[in-house]
Image (cartoon, rainbow, N blue to C red):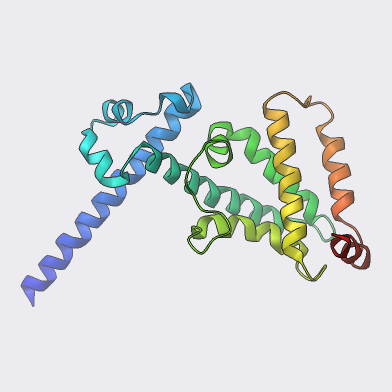
Length: 206
């Protein structure tokens, strides 16, 4: 019994150490990207930054892309939490605007994280059986806005998400000036705050 308990403690400690190393690597990647861009996030640079050998990094993530994918997945969890908080604290009738504001604020406050989530070519599956739960959680916060508004709430959710992403990206790349942002959000919210019967007609028309 004592031997088994000791073995369990050793296994738990190894798992804890592995999780801590993984979190440290992800944190370092994010820090470098925010300061210098994703092109400077390499396995060699990370190895120098946190004093782990390159084989250790490869053992945890398999490749540089594996590290970036882990960062992106963490980002989806964070944006999901931000949207959930915004949705739950919103006043009645103001939920769509609250979520829209939270989404755009996330994109502005974490530009490097948002970039790796959406703009880099990573093999993270979307809308697939293998889609990570963090991605599903993030999308579910938008989907929740339109449940009961039509027979296809996922279509409205995708359109709303696409609109927010377009605004975020066009603003980030300076195709959109920032000054009219409130007007854009106001117009977008008006479009997606249609009465239930009108919303159903819009979806049906597709």
